[in-house]
Length: 84
Image 1 (cartoon, helix red, strand yellow):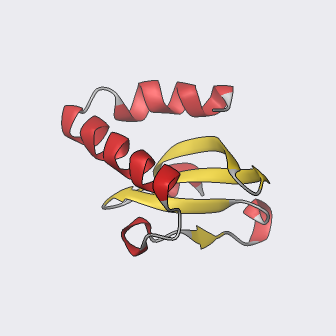
Image 2 (cartoon, rainbow, N blue to C red):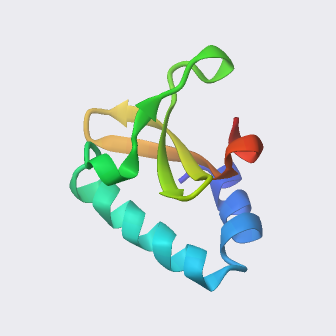
């Protein structure tokens, strides 16, 4: 996890217990199979080209970058407007 991800997680997600639980569930799914349709994983374009994102809940997204075929660096988490 990138330092900026941890800051965003602490600020935007941890204060909401339900969102923390959902985040934990989605990360487990992501680790098991990042192509799981529930994640709505997709490549980003424009300034975020080279990054990908998956859905946590509603409008909350995790932005990440693949470092190796099986290693992802989580870069940011928050609502659509916060991370894009």
